[in-house]
Amino acid sequence: MIIKQADFTKSAVFEKDYPEELNHIEFAFVGRSNVGKSSLINSITGRNKLAKTSKTPGRTQLINYFLINKEFFFVDLPGYGFAKVPKEMKKEWGLTMERYLASPRKKLVFVLLDIRRIPSGEDLEMLNWLDHFGTPFKIIFTKMDKVSNNEKFKALKDIRTKIDFHNDDVFFHSSLNNNGKEQILNYIESCLKGEIE
Image 1 (cartoon, helix red, strand yellow):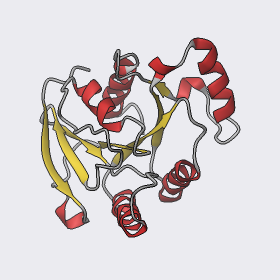
Image 2 (cartoon, helix red, strand yellow):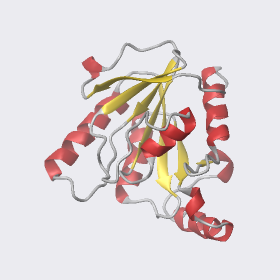
Image 3 (cartoon, one colour):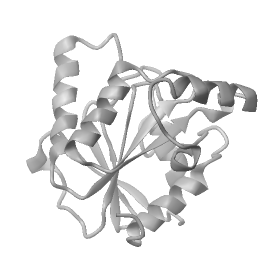
């Protein structure tokens, strides 16, 4: 799949403010505040400044909608797990995300995990949430350029102490060199064609 057009549509907190649902499934991206979510969205859309990246983790506090090829949405969900954010704000972000996950919108969620980190309690909570709401999801391991092949093998072994997955069932991506971009886009295309329920 080729992304020819990617435009910011709107930000929202409550369901009533979400843009009108399109005919196609939408693709949401979620992960810890410093997992490289904005960089991944920019990488796969080929637009360097579409999602705002920041040296300060936790900048995405709203649900941001991007219209892709005038056909479907990418949805950038608030990052979680940033220690310096006040508890009240964290709670608010959690509710913002929970509302979205519980909404009846047809969606697939990409859960981003840093290949160098064992999944945190909040990562596991997110995966449990998705199971609870019956929301289809896929895991993308980010920052692949930061590890060698040997380190990748060890990292995946460590990660498997927390979550169970097959390598064929997850994606690996580097925003630095765009490795993995094509596989993610091909998967999105197959979802849009209805090959994946």
